[in-house]
Image (cartoon, rainbow, N blue to C red; front, side, top):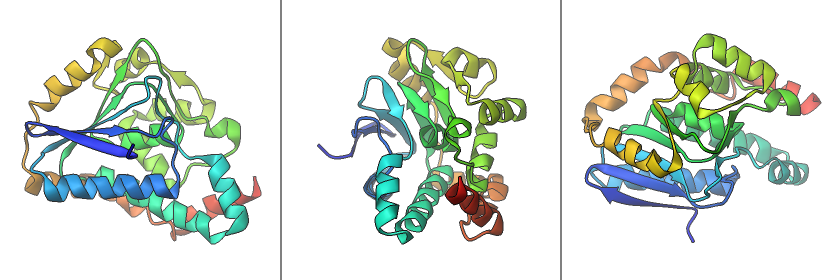
Length: 238
C-alpha cells in the first residue's frame, strides 16, 4: 500500500495517510510532498482534506528512533531531515488550496504541529488527544514550529500547551476555537466534507493571501537562521 493516496469528490481532494502512526521519516516527508505536488498539478481540486487510515492515530510526529539511528550513522541526515520537515510545513502553510485536517485520532508532537499548519481542523470527540509532549522529552521547538502553533492556537493556549505538555480533547480545542468542530468519529467526515464543499475558492487568490498572511511565520522557517541554529544546538546538548 502506498504511504499516501487520494480520491476526488467534486472539487475536494481527500488524502489518506496510510503508514500507521504516520511518523515522519525522510521517506514519509518526500512522499507527502510528492502527493501534494500531484494534487496541485494533476487535478483541479480547490480543497484538500487529510485524514489517517489508522482508526486511533492521525500522526505521532517525528520517528525519533529512526532519526536517532540515522543521525548516529550520518550526522548530516539530521540537517537534511530538518530542511525537509520545514519544506513540508511551509508547503502546507502556503498550499494554494483550502486545507483541512480531519483529525480522526491522536495528533502528537510533530503531528500536532503539522495539523496547526492547515487552514482548518476538525477532530473526533470519542477518542484521541492533541498534545505537544516536547517539554517532557526535552526537545525544544524550532522558531518556525512555534510560529505555526501560535497561528492555530490562541496565545494563552499555545503557552500552556508548550510548557505543560497537556493532552487536549477535541471539546477543549473547540472551546478555544483551535478547531472548527468536535465531532464523533461517525460524523467526522460528514462534517468535514459538508464544510469542504462550501469552500470552492480560486487557487490564484489563495496562495498570495496565505503568503502575505503568513509572512512573519515564513520568515522564521529558515533553518540556517541563528535562532534555529541555537535551538538545534540546545537539542543536541539535551
